[in-house]
Image (cartoon, rainbow, N blue to C red; front, side, top):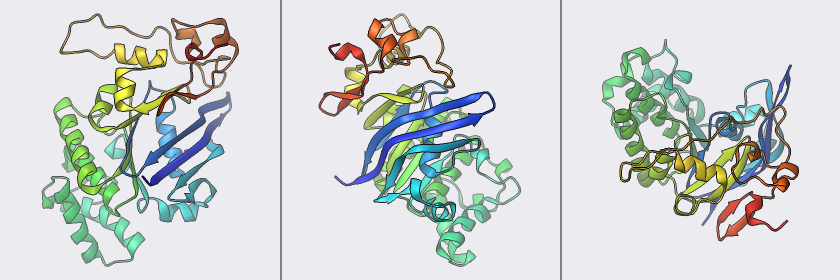
Length: 319
């Protein structure tokens, strides 16, 4: 299977007046053609920063300080800003967490979407609007949305517009950054069904970022669990859900309510570390019920425990 995206030892730091925040600190993974990689973790784990870094959109005072992002043999981290502008939307696009983060409130929806096509393909506005209408129809929106302003649409409709925008140029990879967070559960289900449908029909490769592990189960075939700027577990959805290896993954799964069986809900004590000064050793050890002396001293290597199932935990290593 062809590789769509390769991320190698990526590091993204924010240089603030109060210290250096290591938001993404040595992350590596591969997204194959047709894969949906779910990236999960608590708020502040570095998930969204990872998505922005792939697009080369890390906001100041952050910057990529190490590693490589390779899309279709193109090293994105080596490109200039002008070169990256040609790549965004055409080869890699993003469905942002809130539709209002991307939609211009004083432009009609059709004009905003057509602008992308005109800029990248050099076609006329009339041709661009024809493509826009096709994509609005594809995401289940009425064609009169072309003439509406963002404030005239519901939250679910705005999010569908953003999804349509992300697919306009048929990109190789789509990054969905918590696309259902601001929506009620009914609209959330509609958006998830739409993404699953588009994944199958358009043969999309996707990175789906969320804090909700139950959502990832619906769409992803691979899962990466992030904690404190690092991936602590990576594997197929079946393996991660059926045989979670890392204590953090186990705790996240135990905190999900179940409608099939009654069980006492658990939670993870404490809070994620300050990434300006993360704890030595394993970054999860202050909250881990299985922490050993070695966990407090040395960072565990990220290794393959079973075929295709990786984790970084001293429980699986002799020390």
